[in-house]
Length: 262
Image (cartoon, rainbow, N blue to C red; front, top):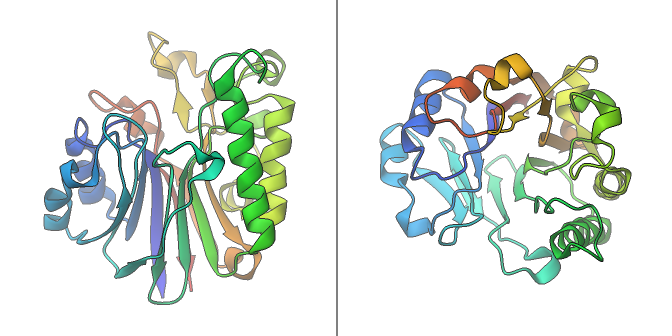
């Protein structure tokens, strides 16, 4: 069984219903995982996506903030969610395909602007969230699993436009990167995107603040596709659809794709 999966922080699924529909029509991934849906599940435009062939949905939502959804052409069973760091946020949901593969869809807290938990509660929440992810995966080590989402950390020097300038900027600080790798190690996760594209600058997010985001190209790779070691070798054809960032009224994130032969 081969399937293509994509992950995309959509920054409001209702506002950008047309962009989601365009991606589903143009690229036709078997599974699309969305983050920052900013909508209760009953208000998400799921009927439109079902018309395009994505009738299987596993989602968690809330009004105006957060929210995660898995849209699938393939039958998928809802296998729950976890409220890491007890934030009461819709930031995680998991689904299981008929072949036994579990897909975790995450939206890790951004962490605010100041990388100091004493001065910035949101940064502390981010670190606590990652710590609880680490502990959960350590206690119940996943098998035959894929983890995707906006993890809000660009771990490598070539995942940001300037390693030196971003070392003290939230999303690329050493303490965040350490937590990121702790989660990976605890779950036995492999970075599918970088396994396929091991060298070179690679971004999935460009700030709205730049007048010409493409020309400035001050990006970060915040969106990730991971797989457990037992299936990581089946992944291939990773790509980031940079051009989607240039669509009309876009999300500030671009979709990340990977294909799995299982």
